[in-house]
Image 1 (cartoon, one colour):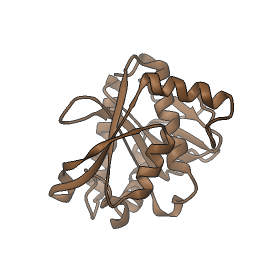
Image 2 (cartoon, rainbow, N blue to C red; image 1 turned 120 degrees about the vertical axis):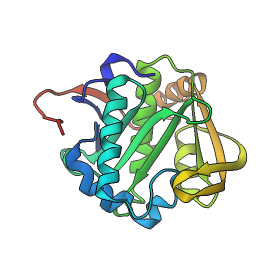
Image 3 (cartoon, rainbow, N blue to C red; image 1 turned 90 degrees about the vertical axis):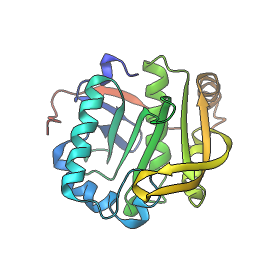
Length: 216
């Protein structure tokens, strides 16, 4: 799904305010504290509440393995200039049911309301289409999560309808809104963005920086 460029743990995306990098074992404590909070976990399909350190470590090891294999790209969201300060995660991985590339993300509650989720998601979406050959990205949001829906709409996703989806960590089927973004739409949005049509457009740079150790 992802090219060789992203399969090295020195890969990093840079936006106006954020650095997105591979997760590492040192992030486990922040993942437990932020992702394990009920307000965050309840909006996700696979984050349990409470979230134990062992579960966080297993997630990080699996994310790094999948990144290295090119099967997905899971990146830690950090403030620019503070690469050790994880505030959330963003990733694209195969949907368990359809196999299509699926976008997921979460932010710790202290970082809500600042536009970080949109900025991080746009950066990863740009990398997916710019460096890979995929034609579409799918995703969904719980119907009780309008903030996530606004993020997806600002990233260019089109609403595909509502339905029930299994959320394993929530132990059941829940109503969700389904969304899709295809390559043609992304290319159009990027072109319009260069003319100033899209507000809050985040410029994205890919950086391979071997002066920073990202080893676990």
